[in-house]
Every structure is written in structure tokens, then in C-alpha cells.
Length: 527
Image 1: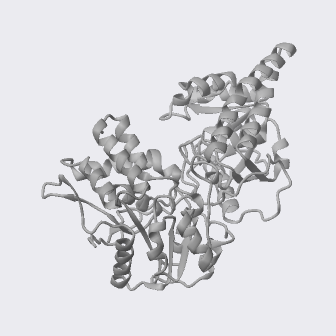
Image 2: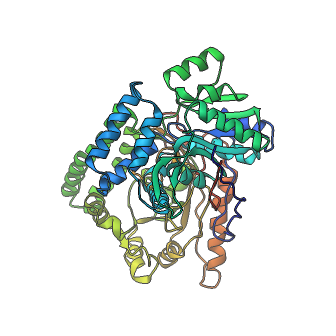
Image 3: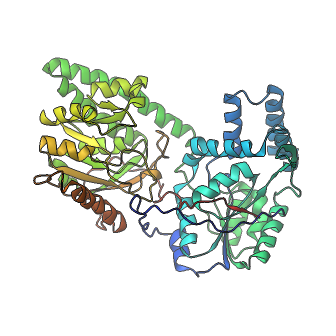
């Protein structure tokens, strides 16, 4: 196997900006790892496509090249034909991946790697199963040697490994010449099936990893040979042959549906969600006209549409502290993890609220119109807390409307709480309103960071007691804001244990998982 080993990269100093919180102990595979042996002699080998990630990373690469018109029609048709023949068993995997390598012949390897990182950030990151992220983190907590072992190419594998803090990768590599230009060839032997198993065996021998103590997570039938080598084979979303062997040998099978299209039912759910806006908006218009009150119509829409969208997509909210939602008007704060978080909070607050959004969202045909209807303040991303930007919200608060706002100002990783900006608290002070912290623990279990597509699952939310801003001054403001932020950190670290009694949407699926990957700087080591 080709080998490129570098030293472990040091972590950047992020003190004072982000505080990681420990994830809750989840039942099943994560608890098993947490209760198992510690130490680097235990290996944890993860496949990529279909295991860590829903679907195929190569498909994201192809879509990107098609969008940029960077893939010739004849190249695309050749790849599609070979892929179909491979699925039918008429072509070897080696033929398929070598054909793909030819499409980037003559390009700079550095540019291909950079594009791979871009594709990961914009397309692949949201496809990582949160349950598998949590398993990766569980192995890392135990000090295991974690390896991403895949038949995909380095430009597909390395970004995922970096994102999850995985130091080692075993995968296929494109060959580059002395000038860094790709030759259109693959390093031999091609990593697939038996050669993948032998590569992992070599890695284990080189790094003093005991395969008898190790875990292997994969979905493909071709990985049966590697499954038989480890002491803890763990099929994930397995193919038919792997599932059959797993059943006969008593290997535990894991199946996840927290990412991906969800099949025909998932498509139907999303269509129903989008379609529900029209009828509800029409009724809301009628309510507003009948009562000659614009706010009455808006309240009808905000009371029913967010909850309808969540219910249609099978998303349930487990809420503790729901009694604190009755404090009105108030500035409702929420930690910002994904595009759907505002829907979650809106489903709780229901009526008589407005909020803040970026100018980019204001240019959206649907969300821009909806935001203007709700009197949302659209602000410049670079200057969100200026007096001019906050003035419309202060006026709305004085009229008795509650404000929904994320004090972090931007979406962050789910393992951290970012620094709080002053804007939300300035609004509360100007209008004399309390702030009500809403802590969202795991919205990534139903949606990725950059997508509005929902998957069935349960989101845990804690509403904390209102915080009065009476007595807040410019001099003590920084300290008081830090106290509110600390309440978020403490709640996330020690989540309320009681079964929520508050508001829920309809029951839903099994998606779970807590924290987005454990990111560490530096490249993974390719082995």
C-alpha cells in the first residue's frame, strides 16, 4: 500500500471562542464503545460511501463537474455506462475507477484536492450520518486508532477525515508526476475488496493495532473479507449479501435514515411541506382581511405552518421548560446549528414574533417575501449588530412583538457554543424585555448544517427561565452576556433528564446523534 505518514497536527487555540461539550451517552453501539477497552491497540475502521456518508461521494464530484461544464459528454456517458455494468457485475471496480482517473489527467493534483474540499463543504458534509459521527467520537474518546478505509479517491476521502478528526486514511490515490500534474493513473494495487482487507492488515501490523480487538463499519458486500478479520464486525446499512452473512453469524446490524433522500416517502414529505404553505397562507390572508388586522393573519400562519412542516417530515420536539415560553413579549435566544433551527423555535413560540435574517435570505423569492410579511429585519452579514440594523427590531419589540434571534450570529458546529454578539441584548435593553434562552441540542439529527431538507427524528430542546435585563449597563453587559452563554454550556453538558412534558409534533423516526464531528487541524495521514 502507498504510505504517506505525517505527525499529528496540533489543535488551534480557540479558548474564549468555542467550548466543546461532552455528548450524552447514547444506547447501543456508542455505549458499547464507551464501555469497551481503551488504547491505540484497538482499531476503528470506517468505510465512507453508504457508511459514514449517505450515498456516494463520487456522485457529488460528478454533479459538481457537470454544473461547471468541466466534464465532457463522452466522459460522462462512459462513466455512467461503466457504473451500470459494474452494478450488474459485468465490469470490475478497477475499470470504473481507472476510467474516472483519466477524466482529470493533466490537472494539478493540488487543484483537484482543493476542489474536493469545496465539494465536501457544500455537498457532502450534510450527508454524514450523525449517528456515525457520534461513533467516531466515541472511539476517539477511548483513544482508539481511528482509520477511514475506503475504495474512494483521496480527494473524496481526505476532506471527510479532516472534518471528523480522523488521522489515518487507507484509500485509492491518483498518481502525480514531478510537476504535480495528474497522470490519469491510480496507485497500485487498487484498493477494493480483498486488497482493502490486505491494506488494513498491513496498517494494523505497522501501527501495532490488534485486529482481534478492532471494529470495522461498512455497508458493501465486497467488505466481507475485512469483516471476517476484525473482532467486532459492524455492518452499517448493509447490502443483501453482507446482511445475510451478518444475520447468520450474529453480527449486529445498524441501519440509519437520518440522511439521504428518504426514498419516495421522503420526497412526498418534502413536497407536502412546500405545498402546505399555499393553502395556509390563503387562509391566513382571509383571517387578516376578516379581522382587518394584518397581525392576526400573520399569527395564523406562524402558529400552524412551522408545526405542519415538522409534522409532515416526521420531526418530533422533546421540550423541557415549555412553561417559560409564556413570558411575552421577550427576546427568544437560540443556539444556531442549521437552517432548520428557526423553524424549530418558531414552532415553539408560535405567534406575535419577528426576527432577523441576512440580506442574502431577503433576496430569496420564497423566504424573502415571507420575511417581509413577518416584518423580519434583513441585515448585512458583515455588520449585523449596527444601530441601524437593530432599529426595526427595537420598534417591533416596543409594539409588543417577541424577537427570535441567534446571539452567535451564524451557524456553528454542534459541538460548540460560539461567542455571543451584543445585538440581541441591546434590543432587550432598549425595549425593556427579558431574554429567554432556548437551547437546541441535536438539530443535526434531522437536518444538515447547510440544507433545509428534513429527515424524521427527534430534537431535544430546553427552554431556560427568563433572564431580566433590568440593571444591565454598558459597563456590566459583557459579564452578563457571558453568564447567559454559560447557561447554554451547562445545559448542553448536563441535559435535563426528565421526560419532557411540553409541546411535541407527531411522533417520528429513529434518527439520533448528538455532536458534529470532532474537528482537529491538519491533514490525515494516508497509509
